[in-house]
Image (cartoon, rainbow, N blue to C red; front, side, top):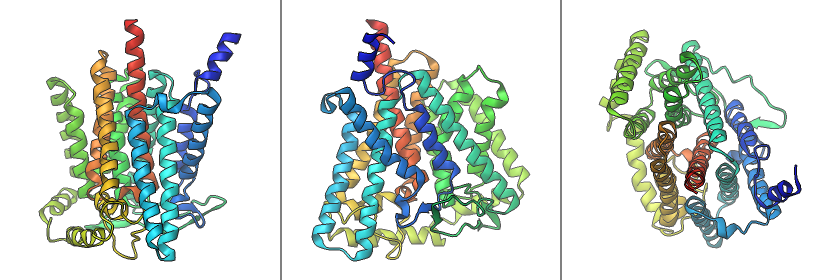
Length: 437
């Protein structure tokens, strides 16, 4: 390396292909998906998953890179990092507000854990945003994200077929399980969950990976048909057999947003393929189609829906005590009431300010991807931007039926995709500027 090259490496964070974050993000995906979510560091609860702890290391790494490169952080702040800072400030203010008003020991501990989780999310988003150095490297991360979602789906399908959890024997030195691993069934069918804590967490993670699997299947033509399409088949199959209204609604929202960026012929072809896949799945699994129909026919009368509706009144009553700032992330523990709605839970724990900041962060993740998509002329890059928008929208919809930020795999996947969406926008702007200069 020349002297000039060494100078460039010193003043630019994550400079050079060898110094980028793709390997670290791959390690994060392995820890997130391969290690069962029920395994945690003792005493840290939901903040003690190995992937979550790596997220904290990521934040220190990101900060050290900016210090080493002597890059003024404020000068380089753009929309998505600014929205992340706003969300972190909202969570910090809710934490301080809860401490000032006094909390029982249980809530004090969970508030501390909530703050640790937030730090890990910030580190993950920032490293993904700043640490991918080219569009080719971004596609590499997308491929690995799809592979993780597909392998989770395969494991879930095997669990469904064998009626066994298959991961209950997994142990990792230094980690303990904070919940028993057992199959969860509905209507006589085992619900796939792979290494997630709950089938809903499994559903939200696979739903978020589906748009990237579909785009790579359509455009990654350097590989054969089987290599391109088996992840799509596995992911759609697992979601279809999940017996989860929330996952199916999220799947519908994701597909709608994704296909808005496609031409009519592509929509028709993919629509017919999807219809054939679903028909095949429900024909091969007798009784599954009627079980899914009963899920939607029973809306309003089943225990799940009644519980969610009942949660509205509880959440609003608790929110009245601290409407603006809430009581601290993680403080409304399941021992009080289970709110299967992340938006309501955020309202209780971080107030109106926290909900608004989280909504702005998700909206920012969609907007930067859509705006960057318009700059591209390459069909693959345009569809990749649409995939980021679809994944975030699908997750936002599912969050209305699932407290996803309480689950490490769901939250980790969301913040990884948000960071990669920002990287997609940043790299797209750089490449467009380079081509016009």
